[in-house]
Length: 236
Ligand code: IPE
Ligand code: IPE
Ligand code: MG
Image (cartoon, rainbow, N blue to C red; front, side, top):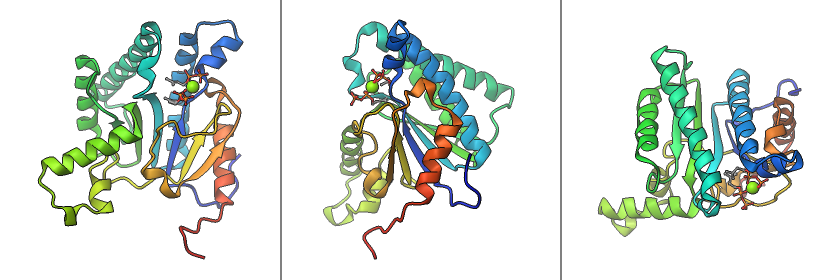
């Protein structure tokens, strides 16, 4: 349960980790963990919209995750395809309720049909305002910073014009607030190249639940803990 009258984080970022271990614990192939993980992702998206979170970023596939077997990568890409096709279908029926969807990450190396659907969904939902869902796919924080610097260089930006604001505005998260709360379940205590620039003053919450077991109650616990933190941003 969420505590009453607490200040909610404006932007929550979640590292959806532990799918493989969840499947292994059940004697299932890793891919089954990813399938269950997508169901949980949908449920948590809906829950965040219900409680009034404005921005939620989910880490779905990193620039390092290409190291995995072709079969596992293929399954994850097909799950992404399924999600995009469903979004298009719902957009046609006008069922996506005021949700802006953005895909953070490099489009390079992604299948052209996926890139096309990502671009379309982003364009169709860009002006929606109730909740912003970011899905980080082929995303790496270092890759994002290099991409941003190249973008500034290509635009002929002079050294004096390279400010923190200019760099922020060239990231995949341009114009969005930095995450207030970063959650990593599954018992790992690291960022794994997630939002390394944006995380400068984020609060962190770690727990041991594997992502396919994650529930709205678990999110409530993280948000309650966040509400009791004292954020100083370098002040007193
Ligand atoms: C997270 O779960 C999903 C991706 C990284 C794509 P993992 O697949 O990393 O699951 P574990 O960490 O091996 O249990
Ligand atoms: C981070 O998880 C990436 C995603 C959850 C998408 P990993 O499972 O890839 O991270 P490491 O390898 O444990 O650091
Ligand atoms: Mg993992």
